[in-house]
Length: 418
Image (cartoon, rainbow, N blue to C red; front, side, top):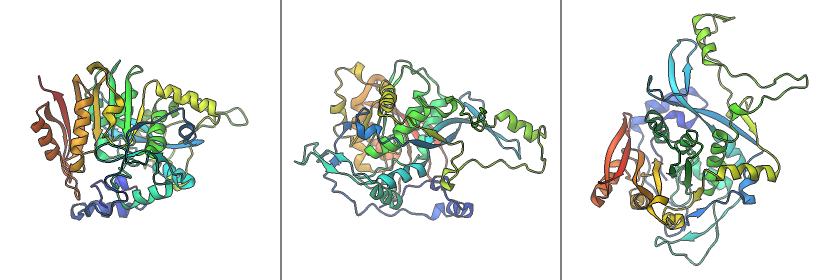
């Protein structure tokens, strides 16, 4: 097992002192090597299309979704932000892109409650059936145990429950480099929480965004709810509920202007209380204002997912065989933009990822690969992936984004050579 390098914020510590200590020790942490895989490397989950109209899919939606806002910082003055966060005590402002995402504790709770096994097809490394067409994957409790011990278990769990730093970098880059997505086709590989692909979905009603992840549990319990939260059941577009007296019972959100007034001392009932009001935290059992009911009836759920299916398809399984499944009839059927983040952590998967991009991208299209420059424990790194691209000679490749950190983060842009 091994651990990626990620910040203390990703660990969601309850005790701030623990988080601070984690940041202090960040430079001293060396990940353990990958070992003790839970499945044979010869058995891979076959690429397949998730049927949104299947009972196992629409029944996987909980009756109530607990959600939170992802605040993704963007360059001030870039015009990319859709919100401004203001600190009451200092008046400092930060421009951000905000997206809704399902709360991780909510996902874990559902997985532990249901503990369902799922059926998948398996193939060997040559993409040939092993003779067994169906097998049982990890149930909810086993998946939680795997996720708790390691950020991935090769061939079983590929880290899709978490929202990784490079995915946020990719959202910020897309927001700061706006373009029209009307009529375009987009694919996000190894999507997990799918915030980059979802951001594009929010930018156009005619864009098609397909999403792929290794685990069907991730697609059903994380990806699909996140798509719904940002499109067809957005919390900020829901009618306010009324109490028994006919008054709006939903708490009104605090506007940025209100925060500015407080920071200037206007309309502030208590000048001594300058700290921000802490947000509701579902991990502490506080769900007020951060929960959304899902329709109960099968008919309503199927209708809701039918709307989702008009703009998005969901693919599960290994990258091997995905291009065959997509079955492109011509270059025009391929994707205008391919996105992927934190997917080059293992060098032995570089070729499959690269071939999927190469054979799925339309001439004139581009791919954006967001990654850390090095992943401890498995040897995956940007340089090795870039050498593979340059050796093949099909694409021009350049770094379009770089963020300095303990491990530098980059975004590579791939475009076909002229």
